[in-house]
Structure formats: structure tokens, C-alpha cells
Length: 214
Picture 1 (cartoon, rainbow, N blue to C red):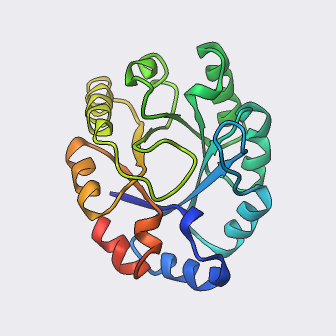
Picture 2 (picture 1 turned 60 degrees about the horizontal axis):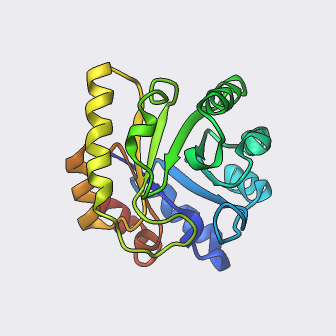
Picture 3 (picture 1 turned 90 degrees about the vertical axis):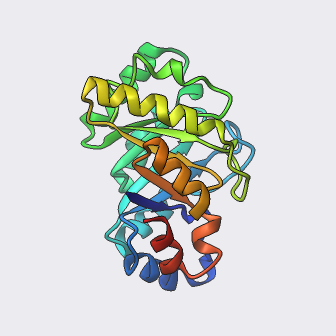
């Protein structure tokens, strides 16, 4: 199981201590939420924060963009240190444009992911899952941390797991939103590969909370 703590909930008054705790934990990735105040009603990090985190941590930089123009900013965040760049299905106008963006990300030497909101059917990914390295299932409405887990995400994860196994694809399933020890266990049982947790990890002992998810 890959644990990807979301730094949206990190204590930025003592970033060094938090990063050191993550490095000492079982976490393998650092989840980086980019919000533009337009696609979602919140405003968060830009590429400079990503650059700083990349310099201070050896964790894989898992960048999730909740922005209106993921095509325009893909090279910006990849150049800033993104190892994985995940955009939203709902932010791109057509499947053809999504495939174009996925190819752009790959051509930049980065892995590509696609995400769906809670109200978006998993069926929309049927013809895209062969193209991406990761699918991110949102188990809360994107925009703010600390929301309650939506159990409908479990059915989406199970469907994706079936597709990936049947087609023998090299694609990971990630879930983000309301993840704690209890909901993380349910997601594992449904076939998830990557757990994103923010409030849960940074709301207690970072190392212990990560261990409870691993």
C-alpha cells in the first residue's frame, strides 16, 4: 500500500519538522493539491511551493491539479518537480483533448493521472484507463480538507480494480477524501493502491498515523 499524505493539512509553521516526520514514516509519496479558486472554491499552492518540497524531501511528488486549465499548467508543475501529474476529467472538454494532455505529460517525462469527482460516473474512464498511469477517485467533493468519506467511492474502486486486472494494465488506483484507519481499510478491501490522507495524518503523530494506514 502506498501512503500519500496531503500537505494541504500540513502545519506550515514548522514545515521542516513535518517533512522529517514524513521521511521517517512508511509514506512513499507526498500529495500536493493545486486549486485555482475557479474549478474549485479554494486557492492553494503554486509551483514555487512544489519546488521547495522537492528540494527538502525524497518522496515522490504526487501533484493533483484541481484547476480549469490543466493543459496550460502541466509543463509548469512538471518542471517544478511533479513526478505524477493528475488532472480532472471534468476540467477538460473532450476525450480527445484528454488524450492530448496525457501524451503531453508523458512527453515531458512525467506520469499521468486522471481524477473524477464523487458525482461523476466511473464509466467515463472506460476508454481512458488504458492511457494513464493512475486513476484518482475523489471520495469527497474537491476543494477543502476534512470532509466525510463518501462510501460510493468503494464501488468505483472495485470497478476500476476489475478493469485493470482483466486488461492487465499497469495503472494504479488512488483515493482521496476522508481517509483514516477505518475508511482506509475499506478502500484496501475494494482494491485501492494509493491512500491519500491529510487531516488524519497531520492531525496526530505523523509517523503513527501513516503506519496505521500502511
